[in-house]
Length: 386
Ligand SMILES: [Fe+2]
Ligand SMILES: [Fe+2]
Image (cartoon, rainbow, N blue to C red; front, side, top):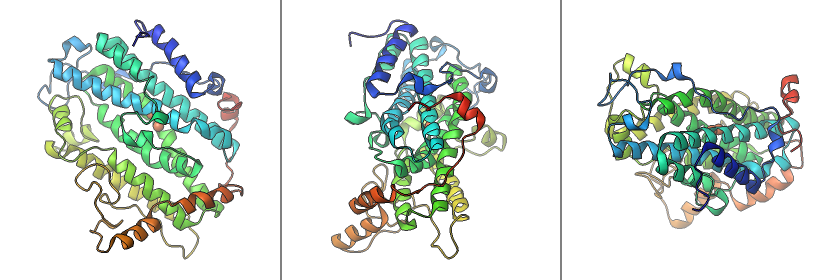
């Protein structure tokens, strides 16, 4: 790595080269403020959980008690940053085929915000973690979703079209919300303080997803059974993102105080006992409950008599964890039947080549209901020239 950045400005130069590579033009950001943002107040001063509870939060990496903890922090920040840049690589090509002006704006803004999130993580690595951090900050710009070498599987999956995009923002960005939430109580203060502004931006991404799916239902062009298959695809991908069951790294991250539970502060207040062996399962469960409620809301927009949309069970179509590559139904029961029967089951519950083909013609119609841009969104210039 001969272009290892020494200063933050060096890194920004390399970032611009990454942007050029990905093909995200800087003017698409409009008036978007690509800057480092901290909410120090929300981060708190005192370590909230784990073995160091009650001591002051660490403001510099040298205050972190030992190297394995620093390594865990670097790896956590790296994984977070990796997903941010990866999602831009996955989504950038969609700008050319946005179904409405509003959607072009929304996608360009989401990509601008993901770039800011990636910046923020790179900044932490560059500022607090010496040579090790600089190396990781540079690698954030060198792995690529198109080459399939981003760190998490979901972020290497191609996103060929806008139906994927709406499901992705609804379900995969929502996983992001949970990850950021769990880091928001970190004992490493600059990390915790990064989360408030990121979470605020993330809520727009989730909103774009749920709003998009609602507008798809409203337009009534995409067959609902097909929509369900895409939901199934991205929900199972998002379930994987919570990581392996009985994770020892999640266990240690909690003991060390660097990554908490979802709603850690509320749980501490209510004296909810922690099960350190099952932290990933616990977070996934919270996530699952939230998307069940979200999909129920969507069902409120279905036409009379339509089969309700649902969220597949955590056991369905998993690539990670105890149910990895096993045959489970969307209800979570073991699938009983022959290979042929299983293949037929999969073809009715996950997107098929035929779906992809059919979508090409469906996309020629008004398949997402219009949504007007607000005056402020127009004035922002975000995505206007994309
Ligand atoms: Fe993000
Ligand atoms: Fe996001």
